[in-house]
Length: 444
Image: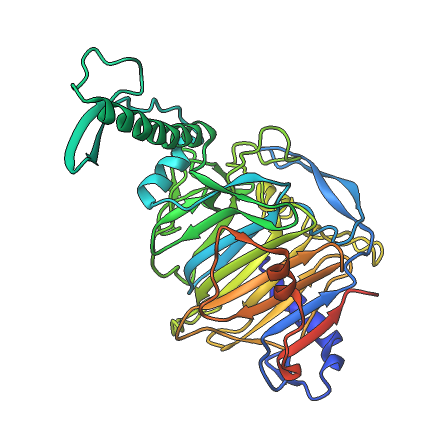
């Protein structure tokens, strides 16, 4: 989100006020009379170009090169990062992409495991080898023995033939479980379940209550050369690992704690795939991770946006939005990013920002949605700001229909380890109550 975003949103909504004949103006923004549960954007298959950063130096040099894009949802098929600004309490996030077949997908783990899981992405840890005590009831008698998985035991408990048979069976099961755990540790994921081709697998998950963080990292424009990321007088703060409340840099990936993100704080969520020379231009010294890419993807988020009562620049103006991952990796709040176009033609805009639920005025309870790129547009319809309790929202990008959909979900919607293709279709299908649905088009 750029600091000039309010003006851009106001311009877009003025142009689209006609989609709602009875729209009213309020402090420079246009609103329809009632809140909706879904805003759908169609016609996303419009080719264009943007200015990609080709070089960025500590000395202040920033050069660009044209990058063409095309496809069903381009440029939003490129990797996207998730951004949350307070006052906001983030409860859970889940990201889904199409399964490639019968493969494993991560299951959630606790903060302890989650924190270690994040660290294992960057540090090698030797798993502690220890024996396991197996207890079983055989022929009405309780027996136990030491099961050594790292070579034959020097001693073994005496047992009858039935006990030995049972021991072998139990040992086989436990060994299989242990093998799966060891494989998960080596592969950086937890034990998993298969997802059929055609369905969507959960590739990233966060739960504030359970302190689970899997497949994602928390970042911020918090660069501190002594901790992580960098800072200078030319570009300011780079991306860095965020600490548990998102206010300062952390030395390594850290799980966001359960609590309220302050009005002046912004949290960024990227995938746990670190850039290794394959993310285009990255600011020197910055912590750099890939976002979530692909022409078909689903983002589920649960959050509340309580009223803080604070006043001033950006105070009490919470927001949830997405950016092309190249923007924060260079300069989200500087001129050295692909966010802005050169205005040479309608087809030359920025690389993509999607405002999902954004409050545009201090203390307002109406939240809008706007897409920023060459063919960008916004809607005068709005979502009710979730001030008193969390709201669950689904953001779906679908290649087959060249559609982006934002839908408010039922409170009991489950952020499970997978979604069937029918569930995804239901997320993007039109809201059944016409007055709660808004349809927009990117077509010029």
